Amino acid sequence: MKSSNSYLSGEQKVSRRRSFGATTDISLIDRVQQADQASWHQFMAIYQPLVTHWCGRVGVRNPDTEDVCQEVFASVSMSINRFSKQKESDTFRGWLRTITKCRIADFLR
Image (cartoon, rainbow, N blue to C red; front, top):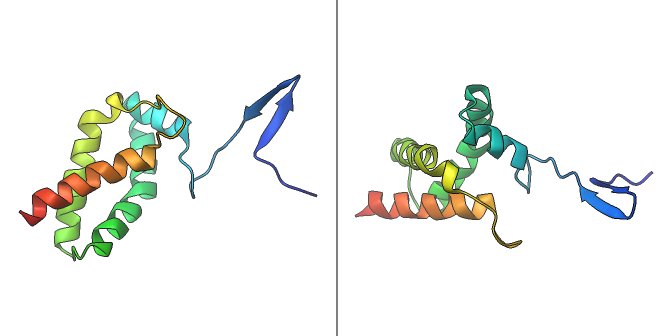
């Protein structure tokens, strides 16, 4: 049996992507934007390891990684309501990676 993350509803194909792997759960982002505290904790559990990984790839090491992560997520918490997917190519991870690169650059100055 083939597993699928989408289904057909009438003639319209509706995507049901809900993943904590390669894609971002947009409903989680929506709940974080609404200041849902439980969703923020879930968000942090998912994305803090990824930001830590990105920091490590450019040579930022502990305890500096923790400081950079704190700055990244402070920036995210202040600007998450400005994230929107205007083009198909816009991704939350790309947005988060841009913030991470900026905070790493700030740290390295």
